[in-house]
Image (cartoon, rainbow, N blue to C red; front, side, top):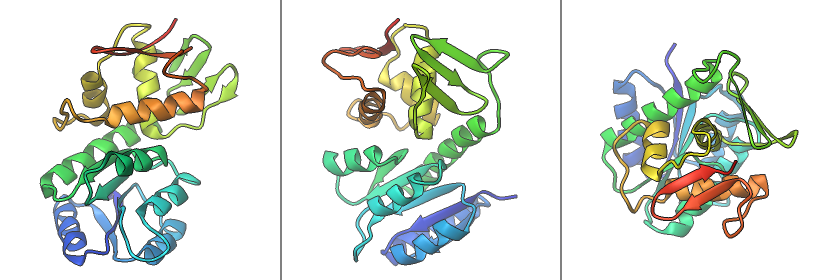
Length: 234
């Protein structure tokens, strides 16, 4: 059964182009030019991934759609933005987006990002645990159940997006060792689109800290090792 992907962009040429490339990869595409149509699809269809344009006319934009999805679903969300500004990217990732692509973009890059997100999503929702026989990781008050895709901190559940869960899992698996942003990026997304100016991991770390009640200045859990990467404090 093909994966079902929703594409929402009011620029018809872009939406049509994305649909063409995804269809060529045998994905089932639900294409919409308005947020209102997309809302109906979110409510009725069993989707595997969404590609959302941030800037759309009307009262509902891509950020609002992303927020609506995250209230009920955990499937990956990729944001499209015409503005290469940090605030849009940070806002999208904070609301639960897993990745973003700045227009203009190469269609094959988008396809690669889609495939990477789907691989990761299926990996954790398919119950495959490579870390231990039980799939349970315990570290510094954290309990991560890889099979169930659940995380507890001091016996309280953490509501994490798939990307946040992946970052926390990787850091805990390394058992206090430093993991660079580049290592995290490649292990999570599995592609080659990382650059030194890419702040995707930084934003996800920031949001993860907020959910864990952590701070950058005086971290109890996720520590930044400047110029190197991140680690979970023992």
